[in-house]
Length: 308
Image (cartoon, rainbow, N blue to C red; front, side, top):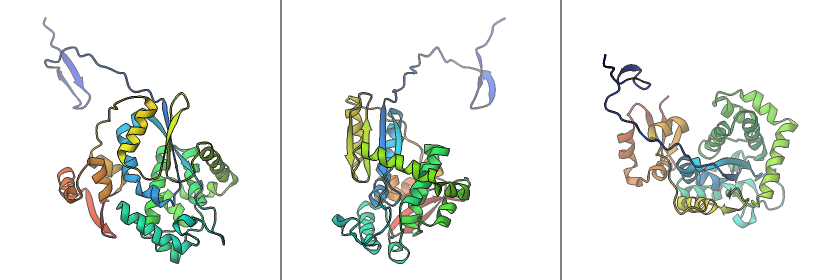
């Protein structure tokens, strides 16, 4: 009897003739994650919001080379009579509005900012403590999702993320128990976890936000402060890995990216896929079905949300 070459196809879900496939040599070697990257940030940091397009692309394309850790830096404990950020002319909450608007216009990650005049964030510690509780009790991925939603709430939808009810709503939308998590963040453990991050940020030499610190197995590294182009982070990774070239991962599809992020500004799509601003709409129409997304506008910038 002659036996045919048979196989069951995991994707198709059926069994049949395997075809003419021959033996194939497969290289299972993957880059060893010998690099730790620490991202020192804060929920109300406008420049951190501005670098999201670049940082997301860097993590998506080169995250297989490193372990990524988000560290809370403690930008604003509370307002007081003295200057908070004299270099940027910030002495009181209302001074923040104009600065945020400028950052948004320059980066094309728009920021309303009027909340800081009418209903200012009194401290960045409450949303930071919630981040730490999610990170500690769940995982880095969920904590990062929370941080993104918190920044959208503040910068785009003008919500006060130092307010308990706002934080509970944000966490609930992650399919977590918002009231339980926010209540835990208000307990001593919340500040304890936050203090650990403050200590780590100090040891890393982070004096401003955003700060990206890349450290290799020899405990040597590169520190990149402020908003930089995508290539700066790639070059920094090459330096700490001592490699002349890196192999990026296959690009995530726009459909999967929007499914994951829920909301993307035009600038984020332009950066991720190297698309010109004028070509974004045609790129989206080509890569998404019309019933999969909605197009909206905020301060002259287009953004796209997944259809509910």
